Each structure stands twice: as structure tokens, then as C-alpha cells.
Image (tube, rainbow, N blue to C red; front, side, top):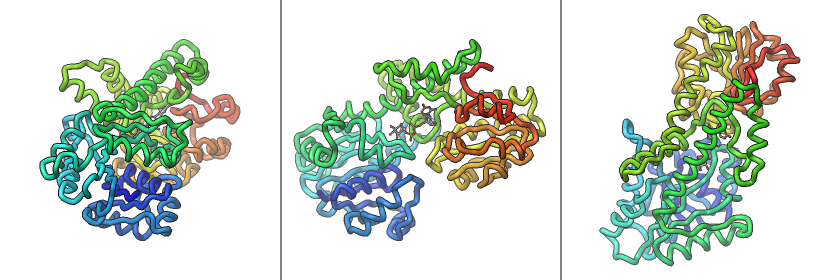
Length: 436
Ligand code: UGA
């Protein structure tokens, strides 16, 4: 199949590279000439394990091409994926769809007859209808299709999530889109393991938001139970296992921590609430999730203050892990940011280590001494605080860490270390959802 992918952000690039890996002829298009030039040199502008090799291999094989020219990208393409950004609109909470609509307007006069336009960007319910109208104002009805095919990729494991998804969701309004998309996925996925959910376009659009809101709620639920565990002398990790092994609940996304962050959960929960509001529906559970998560991120600083005896003025605190989760360089909505800003307001000096996020952290943090070596970061610190559970951080040698610190205090906001082992090394440890 000849496939065009519009937008070489995270979703577009991973999807384009994976489709080409399945043997399709893929052209990825982006207006950002610098990005395209860098991709043509084999430099992938985002951090995602395995993506460099996948891009390099398929580029070398001639199955994956990059261009700034939309006409060039869609020439001969039977499927065109729109994977442009839908950032939150400042002050509104809903998604900014201007890039999606711009792509639709430009595509209208360029696509081949019978092309299937597939919206992969995360878009509010009803966006496909508008795209259909935009293209329909230029093209004859029936000569093109507009479908929805949301992605469920997690940063850090995106390639595995693409190649071995739990399910594929396809939202269609006509048989052509159904046939093309079920063939595209059905030919390369093991359908015994990966069901394809075929539904109406509007339902498909909503599935994406509902899935993210549910996961955000699951995390928030376990985070609140972690608070209760601390008060009543229970352990949230065991609680999560005991609860999650019930197949109706599931063990994943029950790791208590400093609150969820990233470019998806915060943005998508807000956008879903806005859609519900517009339609006069109250999504109270999602509303509470958003409020509780924001408050939690800010409250984490108090945990650090408590561990240090109630005052952090002029103390040095070493933050281990800055990105919103491991295996990414993404700092968007990272819990580390409000934590650091609050500790700074309380008068603490902050040093920080991250294996991949230092460059992005520089853009959002000020007055933080950034380190590429965790032991250097911990030197003379009064406490180390684990905010992101990178493998590098989990495998730190606690004795060496302790040796360079002033006070031996470990605040483990991800329960990355076994508390008994850390205590035997000589640390005073405080974790999440464990008896204080
Ligand atoms: C999320 C979804 O998991 C993907 O399915 C979806 O495709 C993606 O959003 C998207 O909409 O594009 P992502 O934001 O990459 O993926 O990261 P997650 O692994 O879901 O983690 C999100 C946040 O939740 C992180 O801050 C993470 O630390 C936190 N989290 C996750 C927990 O605190 N506990 C958990 O048990 C799991």
C-alpha cells in the first residue's frame, strides 16, 4: 500500500516507521524543513527507544521517505494519515484543532480519488465530521473517505505498542474505509491476539479520550489509597497486587506515585471535560481525577519537607529523574516541575539528575544545577528524591550514593527501592503508600 503520514511528531513518526516496517511504501510529510532535513540525515528528532534503527533500516530500504511537500507525499497514496499535533488551547482546556483543519484544507485538492483520510491525531468527537465537510467542499461526495484510527502508544515503548497492540480501533462511515483499514492492520497483526474494533467514527474518537481518562482515574485511585495506606499502616504495592490480580481490575496502571504527567493524560482529561460540558453532561469522576492529580503533584513537596524535619531552607535536595516517566526526554506536565518549584519557594537549593531529560529540563526549570551523573548530583545533598523510576536510578549503588551525601535521607516517590535494603544501607527512607 502507498501511505502518506502528515506530521512527523511522536505519533506520525512511529506510525510511519512501523507501517514501512510492514513493507508498505510510506512518505512522512512535515512543514518543518529542519525536522525533515534531519530525518533525511538519519537523525530522529525525538527520543524513543528503537525508533532510530527502525527509521534507518526502512529509509535505507527505500520504503520510508521524508518530504516537506504535501503534494509529493500524497501522490499515489491510497491512505493518508493525519498525525499533526492537537495541543491544548491556552486558557480553554480543549484541543487546538487548527493543524488538523489546515491539513484537511490542503489535502482536499491534492488527494487521489478514493483516498482514505485517517485521523490519527487525538481529536474531540465530531472532528471527523468537520474534516469530511472541509474536503467535501472541494471533492465530490463518495470520492474520498474520512476515518478515525486513534493511537494508544505509550512513550518509551511506542514501537512495541504499535506492533503488538491490545486492540486496534477503527471508526468508519463507509465500506471503503473499513476495507482499506482492516486490510492494512489485518495483514500484519496476529488477529487472534489483537482484535480490531470497527465502529462509527464518532465512537472511535471518543474511545481514545475514554481510555486515557480511565487510566488517569485508575492511577489517581491508587494514589489516594496510597495516602490512606500511609495513615493506617498498610503497603500500597501489596494492596495493588491483591486488588489487581482480580482479572476484572488488572494489575497495570496501579503503581502509586507523585501523580500522572505527560503530554496526554492531563491534556486529554481536560479536553474530555470540555466536550462533556459543551453537551451538558457532568463527568464527575474525571473532574475529581483532574483536581486530585493537580493537588497531589503540588503536595509532593510537603513529603520532602516532612522527611527533612519540617524545614528545607538552605538545604540541598538532589532530584533523581525529571522526565514525566522513564525512557523519554519529555518534560511536559512532569511532576518534577511543581515539586522543584515548591521546594525552591521554601528556600531549598536544587540539584537534579536525569538520563535523557536535561536539555528539555533546561527550558522549564531555573536555578537548578543539572547533572549527568547521579552520584555527582547527590554530593553534599541533604536528601535525594526519586521522582522518575528510570532503570539507571533503580540500579544506583545506594552505599556509594550515601557516601557522598550530607544527610542520609531518601524520599522515594516511585517506590523504586526496596525500603528494607535502603534502610540497611543507612538511609532514612520515606516512600509512597507505606507506613510512615
Ligand atoms: C498514555 C497512554 O498510556 C497511551 O495509551 C496513550 O496512547 C498516550 O497516553 C497518548 O494518548 O498518546 P504516555 O503519556 O506515554 O501514554 O504515558 P503512560 O505510560 O501512560 O504514563 C502517563 C503518566 O502516568 C506518567 O506520568 C506515569 O508516571 C504515570 N503512571 C503510569 C503512574 O503514576 N502509575 C502507573 O501505574 C502508570
